Length: 229
Ligand SMILES: [Zn+2]
Image (cartoon, rainbow, N blue to C red; front, side):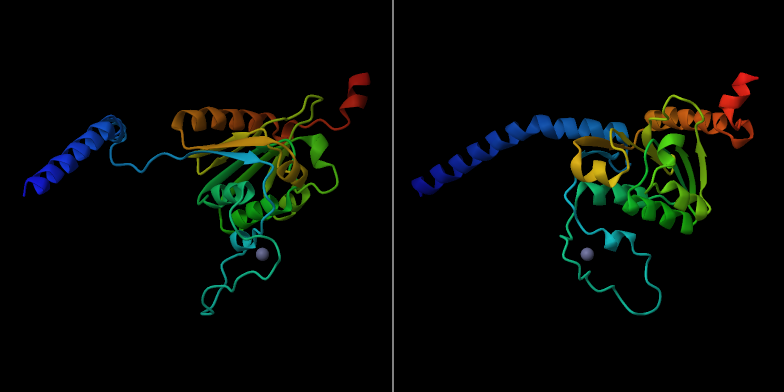
């Protein structure tokens, strides 16, 4: 009897100590929760590259029509888990209304397919890019234009060197990564994915400013010759 009472006291003491230990984090969580109200937590994520090479077919496959049920597993030999690239694709493919892309270099076939898929789904896609890089072999820009996606580019000597995307005017994706297979698979790069009203607003303003500045009605052809007049 005496022994049991001692045991109960020990358990109670340990329980109390644990509860006190956890109290500050519980309070912090409660404060944050009260500030945000009932919204789901805002997305904040960073992806680091190089990305492990994984199969992205499951993400890029248009949903199959007909009562064939779930698609069978992909038979290719690549790993089918998550990678930085698959997470980046996932963040883009979440778009339902709009996608703004402002990219110096765009030649990754997977990212190109994702953007075309969104265009097919009726998402309004606008692309700003650099005139020097888009002329290179392997650039996705020609394919995007052919698919009917609006693209505008610079005409200056300075590079249009941004690398950012805005999903549904709600999520900003930005970092050092050029959208090329070379960068995705070989370079050390970072990409932030964040749901932040203020940053989205500022980047969207920058996008609209450049979009207007690169309006094709303002293009001058053969600027070198013109300058000689
Ligand atoms: Zn596969």
